[in-house]
Image: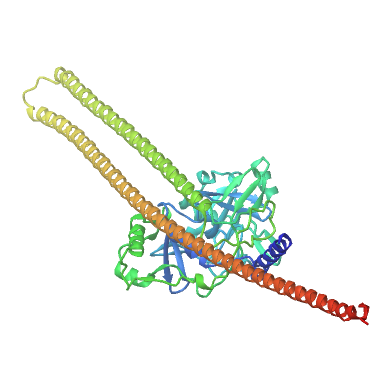
Length: 574
């Protein structure tokens, strides 16, 4: 029995290996990649998907008022690919390394998905002590962007001095937008390419050039591939980024899509993006929040919002998780994640939310500090203006008194020198009349000056009142924006919690199903073992019975000759 149990154990192990082998071979045959459905799912909590007649499904982020792609909350780091954009947004792994950015006059900056990874999809300019970069439009290749016929709108460009291009706080050195057009005229296209595996990347300024201008060494970072969507991190000499190979899935689609034309017709005055001569592009966070509410409402307007029940996951090939691969700077990671994420992703998202809240608090503190400093400067300017007005008034009074004194001194000096003639009184009266007219003229001039000063004071006071009102409006708008952001954050957290609960339920169902299947397999295997053991026992018993019968038959056959031989040995009677 021990030998039999051992044989059955070996057979069970072989059977288990046979069952598991097909899964491995299938996974290897399918390859490790993701579908573009990943973009729709991962970016949904951070913005709104819009259907654009020209570009299809595009994504509008929920961001701060001064957002500009490849300019806000990020910096340039030198890698083997050239200058690589390191974004601080949790969705930066996708929108700044795949696809392109386009500015719409109603919706503002919108991201068009793409399937090819790059260190950054931008064009570069160089000259006059500045480097400049601008997002590439959809449909423009690297070669086309190097051509002189390629035109980029002025409000796409960002310029910074040579020496600060690789600073982590390069945003503090951006050139004001009102100088952009002048700098564009004094710069040329920067055409530094990086070729790898039949792909061309726009590398931007070379390391040697930056070191020559900045007078300091430029570190070259390695790119590490991580196995899940997350915020780009930098530690030691490594940039950790999620950059899988992406294949197009014709059935992929966002869970909810807003019809761009229909929403624009219903809300013609709620423009999200606009152009400004002094700032370039302007983003209206309040209108963006209204768009997000319309898209994520419990009962959305079917004329504007399309809800997709089939999100295309059914046709996405299954994937298995990969691992962090340090030093792999040659190609994008070909690694997949399961459709249901684990606790590590939930913890990372919680960390991202906490970091986002900290950054928002820091931004609020900076704004409040800037507002307080501006208020102090205004009050100081008002004090200086009032002091100048007092000094001017005092000077005007002193001048008036001085003029009056001079006039009084002139009148007594002229009276003794006049001849005592009574025959010409008209001449004396005329002289006095002229002096009176001069005095009146001077008084009128002084009064006019006083009136002008008073008018200027009133204008300054009115301007100060307008500035205070404008500050109050901006503070109220900022408070409203903060409230909208808080509401959006709450909605995102609620949606994320719901998704987590659904994921947990699906995981629990899968575990239960797998456990039930395993139990059934074990029962079937045990039943088969019992049947086989019983069959073997029956066969053994039958063999033993046959052996006993054969032995009995042999014994009978041996006894018969003996019985026949016994009479021949008996003695005969007389």
